[in-house]
Length: 231
Image 1 (cartoon, rainbow, N blue to C red):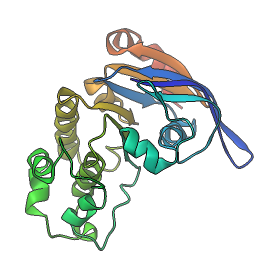
Image 2: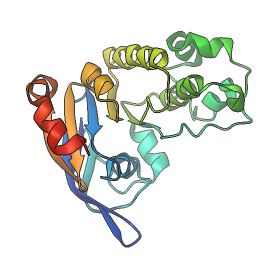
Image 3: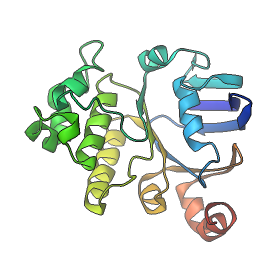
Image 4: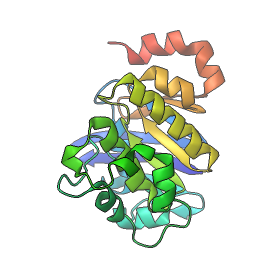
């Protein structure tokens, strides 16, 4: 279970997160929606330890990870797929995955990752710079899984991808959930989020302003869109 309680964070003098509180149950998928600039990416960076939490608490299960360094957050069981993928362009597919393998994976071995993403097996010796956007996203997800995380944070995973690739990623996310991995997605693609999420969160002005299970969200989607998601 992931729990954020009254999390505040700053970029320099700018107060970005104004008391974010949310709970994601283990083995479920949560989606965070909201207009640009409301603090969605900062929230996952705060969970990952990439942005300091000035106030509040972040817990993974019973463990307080609030002020851990990013590498310790990763060791605690959190994987991170950043916006823009951030691959090493001169490393091969296999090498990009291996850089995250601090110890030998028990669940997400290299063989298991290539079963999850067969296309990467075909591109195993291609460099990051030679891959399509969809293939790069697959490598970024595989790299995050290589540390056997309990929780996977994905920042705009469908951004700039063709619909066919997005559909493939949907199948992957559902499979990961079935394998017991919790997922928290920052997403602009409402259709994707609605299709796979168990819990929907909406952010505005650095706070969670809406939090509901997917069944309830579907009955309120038009009011939520008009109030928080449309310009």
